[in-house]
Image (cartoon, rainbow, N blue to C red; front, side, top):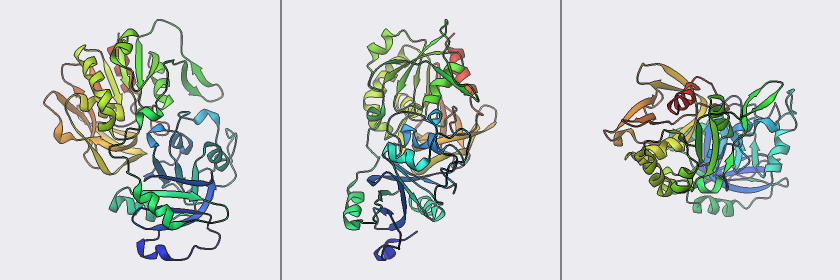
Length: 388
């Protein structure tokens, strides 16, 4: 990876893509996917599979994902592995050029799919060096650009990267959230059969607040025995109560939890006062923490991958989890009314809370996986068991 001093070096022959960091570093590569430019925060994800699920996770809105696994795109894409239909990552950075798809489930090529989604890819990058840079210096703001002719205005791209305000203080949940109430119909996926349908029987009713949710979360709630209604992020309390929920789910999502909390926290506090069961994942977990009186903070580099060890405090069991977050509940600010239930074994950061005297809990990681291990599915069953 180039540093600020080498950013004045001439563009290498054949370079059709570039990453311009806000500190002046310029990284040349080979563009694929959509043409144009996009600004965002550069992060890295250590998952070895599931790149399509990663790219369509709304929690990555405003971010450029560096994949540490070198072979991205080689199994193609399909319509079954989408996690949402709304904005996810703005672009991705990979080590090797994307080869022709080789998988029986593939319906198309990764590069073509990116182009259709308006997302930019950059290949031929030393992703190890870029990942090391993020680990040592934090996640930088940058512009990713692709032009088949290799024509780039580097000073203009640098100016754009430097002027972008970054994710801190940014409420992205209301941008990626659904716009209308939806009765969720899907269930989990089975090889050869695809996605199942939600049974139309008497089940506990979960109202899920969509802050930028992954669809597989709703599928797992159905698998655990719930009937799910999804509502937009800014849905007021009275509209939620009109649906007569047996429990309320708080979804994952992008951006700064403190910004989203301006409208989400009062609703959650009112639900807690009524002792309605609550389960939060990722941003939803952070919303629950804020509602209980804790604070959140931006992490230095964040946690993103499918191999994060988390310790369950009640019995010492270690769960291998899927994670995607750049903010966290500050465990030094947890009030006496909140119990810390899970911690990261990477850095000791908070990964789970429970509200004492209430039927309310949250986890920072993703028990629905997609991609990732399924060690933590029990949390969906735990929540649904609270409703009956």
